[in-house]
Image (cartoon, rainbow, N blue to C red; front, side, top):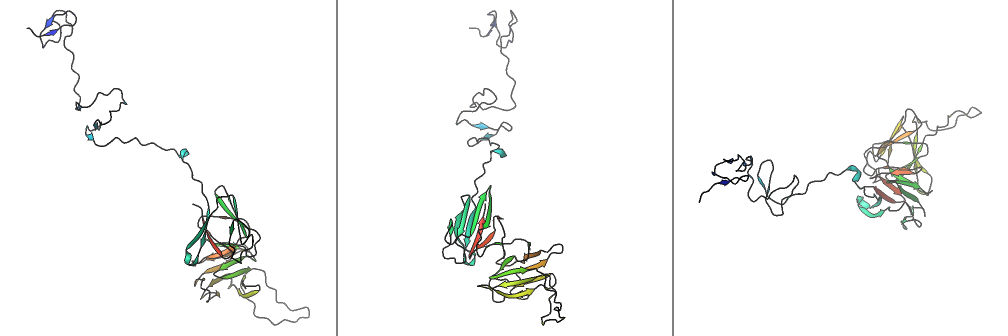
Length: 302
């Protein structure tokens, strides 16, 4: 039997090495494909289309290096857009601070308004006799928390975080001391209509005075500033309270403003802080501390 390649056009039998028909010239041997620079394993299934995916369980190979990749294919990471982020609802909280700075009960302010008092309101401290029956209002709106004094007897006090201006008659707390700023001018000390001078102590040259308010009413010590300033603490200050265990050695200072009647109150790194009585609605921020009655509360908005 003679072997050869049959011409698909005329049926002529041609030698095995022939590439064209000896009779009609038609191609009798298919052209070989160009050699690929990368060897494709025989187990690799044919790929149809640019995005074809190998069947489950088939080995995978890196397109750049030709090295086999072990392990299951990882899904492609998706890029998130800022507009797609969902913000969680923030619920402000009030945390009662106990002795030695420990946390007590936490109150979640999930409603629009919450009242605090001794016998009326959403949050009650029935045993706190320094709280008015309805003492303060906390209101939340657009992620902000605001506190308002409801005409209570003792007010709401906020711990200061930076120097704040005080006006005549403003109240502030240093340790267990309730103090009032007095910036009213002193009488002239002139003689009476008959030309007689009255006995008196020497006049201080300070720009303002601080009065200590006593339990049950009345004033205790009244201390005048030295020029335009006055320091408060346990010892070594213009106004000292050596027996008050809640006052630091150097606790706070007051300085007269050079361009206004205000006096600036500054906490000088005390351990327990300095508090001022708020005079209107006051916005609160995360980490603020407030006194209502004898309750020290920490604000959490996070």
